[in-house]
Length: 338
Image (cartoon, rainbow, N blue to C red; front, side):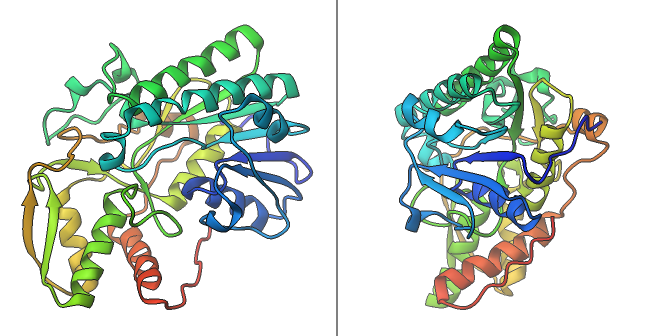
């Protein structure tokens, strides 16, 4: 149950505002008429995925405590999405870089406490879950308690799990109100779709579009295509993030779709959108991650009386249209309604 509502004069900081999720959250608050918004990201402004007019947009290195202090000064609420991450290809080959993101959350927590921030939300990941519970494609959906005993994704998962504990202890020791959301594969328009950091839905859209444009009716799939995942559309992500921030729930909580599909099924869906059928070449040496992962949404249904519900095929249509626009230079109209 929600314990309060934001006021339109509340000062809201989105850390990682130049990224995919952060850009959507900042744009959402701006559309609702909030007047005191700040975004911070290490990327130059012309590299932000979304730029929102009328927002205090700052280029800051949030690994540094002084930049975190500048970001949180005079802020009431902090949404922290800032981290160095990407899809499985990136996190398996950049483990040290991913773990350095621990500096971001640690320094952001310190700065938020100093600034008297009222509430602080940290974006964690399903990569915190015990790998032994994800060895079968027919995986049992992961409950929040399945993070322990700890055996998270090496590098990225350990950083996320440690940062969750930091939030807990800042809440216990310093009475900073913290919220922790565990995302399960967020996708949608206005994000990374190439360059090595993209996740599976955007990558598959790009590959299918490229095959169609080039007349090469073949697609490379990482692994055997039987590995399973759930994918959450960005509209649902926004609803979940804001709902948890407004709630009185203080423990880590899943924010993810429970619609489990194999990678082969994901490719089937994108092919149906593109109205094309491709030959499949399986790269068994490519990064694959765990065999199966899905979100148990029992807890979020109890807390918010809601869970992510956008069908994968519907979200993929929007994502495909956006990626196609980026690859062909067309015009994409933002249809987000959250």
